[in-house]
Image (cartoon, rainbow, N blue to C red; front, side, top):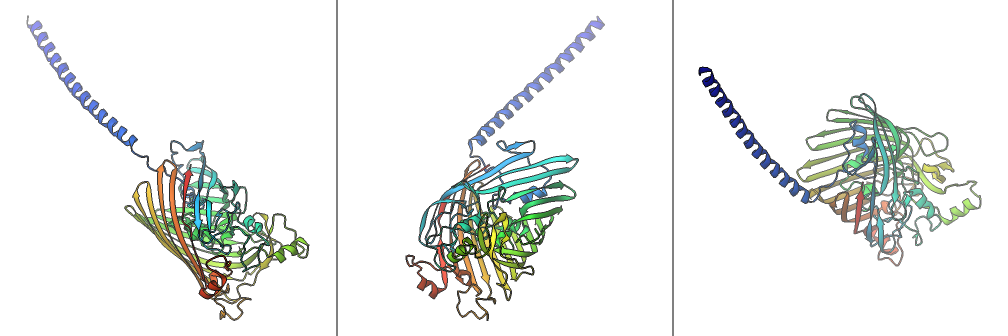
Length: 533
């Protein structure tokens, strides 16, 4: 009886324990069910909200991707709709809309910036119509990063800028050749369309074609055709980075090219980057082609820092045999080439150019505080006659020929100062308002057209002059990878910087008025759509 009584008590205790555990599990299950229901409600609520903008490669001059790309060795996690396979990604940008200019020129199918977004020599009557590459330059790229050893990665990047309205590769020199013979230097080019010098000259990969090796400890080394450090600084510190229509330092290119837009992208280049805590270091050189070529030696160095929302970079460098192609050939020059008078044969086309040795220093900073981003930058460039003069027939980028080379334009040094400031305000995560100001100041210097340096005529190219421009842009990323934008820029050039900008009598700024005021100006409101992938 005692044994049975003890067993009955033990059974009752076990039953009580099981009942208590069951009650506890039921309560936990109810709590988890309630938690799951709450999470599902939050998920449904978030899915119904507009999607935040997908992080993308800033297509500034499409080299913006290179700074974080070259410095980072951990491949970024692809977004759901990224086009990546085994570490190789296809990426790109389409940008097109409409634009109005009170002083413009017809659309150019070859130029990356196909319109006179700032007032230029070809600016004539008003223009309204198709406008591509306003807020960015359209491009297509293929890049990769693959681990080849423990903590060691192989990287590469191939990238082409193009004009989506025509489907043609960006080709600044080709756009100039297209307009050869349409007017003498300094005369109205009534028949010309918009054109502009550029380092993108129709190459298959006109913006990037490099490869290298990257390590989290020892940095990243790349070689091939890649952006100059001066261009990287502009890409990172321009409040309207990459905008042809509303950023002077993107559209005209001399800021990013150390004085000449031809040197924004460097052939035969070698670059090394290293991050040490918050400090960034970089060095780059372009090796001379040898022979009669405008691909001269270039040396650049960079030091930068990132700390608590503040970034700053300083770049300095020296360029030998820099090339500037500011005007087209005159009709007489074209005739001389075609009749064999010059003894030159131009397979792709001939241009005239000014050759110089440039020294320069840049400093720029930006600061992020809440929804505000503040930007500012300054560059000083000194132009001197080249130590290695270039002969007629010299090769420029992509194989174009320099039929007429000016090696003596800077009897005394020309000094150019460029400065800018801007602010970006994020009204929402998908809506930005951007305002920017850009300025240039040129000193008076001695050359053949101004042998005394006294500037008896204020509009000589060697006289002091100024450029001022102000912009405002609204950018709304209304869907994943799509944004709708609108903007406007007012630009004005005076005295020496406006040399050759003589307009026609049909334009409100007739030649007589221009010669009195020594200035030209224009504005360019536009709207467009951009798709990035």
